[in-house]
Amino acid sequence: MNKVYPFELKELPYSYDALEPVLGSETLHFHHDKHMSTYVNNLNAALESCPELHNYSLCELLKKIDELPQAVQTAVRNNGGGVYNHELYFSTLTSSNANTQPSASLQAAIERDFGSFEEMIAKLKQAAVGRFGSGWAYVVTDQEGVLSICSTPNQDVPDFEHIVPLLTVDVWEHAYYLDYQNRRPDYFDAFISLINWDVVSKTYEDRKNLF
Ligand code: MN3
Image (cartoon, rainbow, N blue to C red; front, side):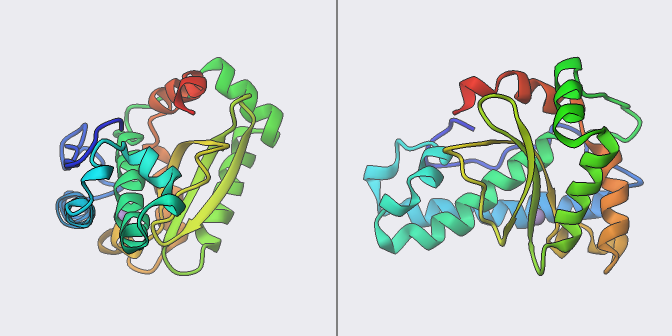
């Protein structure tokens, strides 16, 4: 995620049918090739006339959003956030057959901060299902490795000054409507089986380098 303008649509790290039957290939084609692609194109269009921002990484743009020219703040918040959130979302998924597990240190933090893995998932579900309208729910860590759950509306991102997101659930309807229609809780329950705990654990171990 350290690339600079012009931002590129990151390829999926798996095939379009890799997440079936939880998420169908039609969902992935629309979600990645149409929705995510639009955020990338709109972010680049917004930054085109601001050469002074062309050496900023996506995270830098989002961290410094209040210092950016007023004319591009909303576009960066919505489209830059859209690119960041979707890169995180797609990069932390894998086939539900992969059966990955949290690393020993992540598992220990989960038990310390939530009581159990199941409790963490229950809190994440509460955030995901309880988010009114469109948005995101995350498991995040601070620099010391303390875990928590948070949620944002629209394409907003969590506060990068203080936390690193480990994984996220997209609760915009476009993420699940073809497969689950209006049943967001069913989408959430199935989605959990797709989380690539190898990737999530690696981000957790690397967190100090990500601030
Ligand atoms: Mn989405």
